[in-house]
Amino acid sequence: MLVPRPLADVFAIYENPSNLGRITPPWLNFRIATKEKITMREGARIDYVIRWMGVPMRWRTVISTYDPPYSFVDEQERGPYSLWRHTHTFEETEEGVLVGDEVRYRLPLGAIGQVAHGSLVAAQLRAIFRYRQKAVAQMFGVPLIERVAPRILRVPAEAALSNLRRSKA
Image (tube, rainbow, N blue to C red; front, side, top):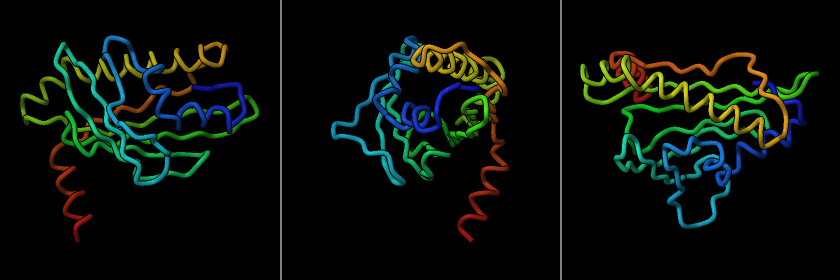
């Protein structure tokens, strides 16, 4: 999305964990479970609880890359996915800040996870990011200007195993 505001202002919204509840759809009943104050930095860990289809789920992400005010990456350390890697990018343009989201994920449960992806999860992830874009636009009091849809990519199990083998080598 394009946010016609200064880079520092836009980055500040996304890097502040307390804003996550404001930009997450209410149907997820999102709350931060981390008790201590969270300072965004590489290595920061954030615990959450969400309710998905009525079932409470605990989730922990770690900030694996932090390059303010241009990007950061959160990766699931514990939670509902076998793999979750969310890259946030912020590019200053003449019109404002181009905010990019790319999510790479893999579901557990093999073939059952594949069916869930096709029938439910991909659509819900797109809905979550659409809500997030609208919420951010409202926070800044600007119209929603979607330039490029968030990239939501399911990572096949074979690719994830191959990447894991390479990273251990």
